[in-house]
Length: 391
Image 1: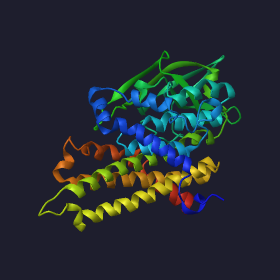
Image 2 (image 1 turned 45 degrees about the horizontal axis):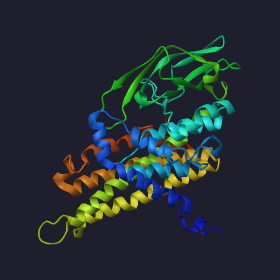
Image 3 (image 1 turned 90 degrees about the horizontal axis):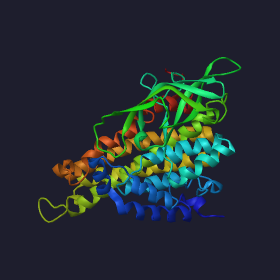
Image 4 (image 1 turned 180 degrees about the horizontal axis):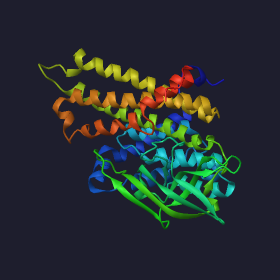
């Protein structure tokens, strides 16, 4: 029996995967990301190298050009990128959400069409669910799809959609009429970004990042019937086949950001000397907040690892419960770690040189998206604790 089953260590293969990813991501690091963000550039160079080396597609089946691993492997890849100062936000979207949905729900032809290019990074697929009046509540989405002969016609708007300017297509969540009940149910469509009637408008954000946010306008966009992923009368499970990975990956991304911030703070606390020859890390007022971050970080990492293991084992409900808790814990520790890191640096923590100030804003994304921490608390209260629904 593998002793890793008893000591909570990751398999040797994943440890080696982490080491390889950390080495590659370390070539780019924070400075590369900041240069790209300041110049309006993208993470394309790193993205494509990650694809060529097989890191982007570790969760995609081998028969479609992937590594044949699971969400545990992909989340580990993203955490290592973030901890090296080079988080790849679009990993949450293209291989995790879109790749998982197509792999679990798509036809053989759809898998062959999309998965190999998603795995090697040559086709970047964005994901569009959020609407201004609905958030991520799929029951309130107003983007609709209707059949017109052999085509689908889509109309609606989406907002806060990441990376559309660098994506080749967007997996859009729309609503179609259930043929049996007449009720509107969510359905998923691959929409090429060069489709007639598809347009975008950038949203100016308060932090610098290569990945931009957009509002999408979908006006009589015509798609072939093969653009529908999964069953038109499929249940919500098709959507959550991608939303659970989104939460797991978000948690891993947040943990990676926290690791980066903590590493920088510890380095500084060991070197910076004030009031004599002893480094500031000898003072409990500096050391204790860093130790607290370390403890909370390891708690959050265990949560996303359990969520990913449940997802990979096919336990969708269990994965949903722990993915939500992991995403909550990840958002909290990313905010706490960056705040403590800035405070450890004092005034230097707010300078461009040390690169932590921008992270203060970016880290809060983990508390807000793709689902707010308050909605996670609602979920845990209702599904984990059995309390009455509050909304």
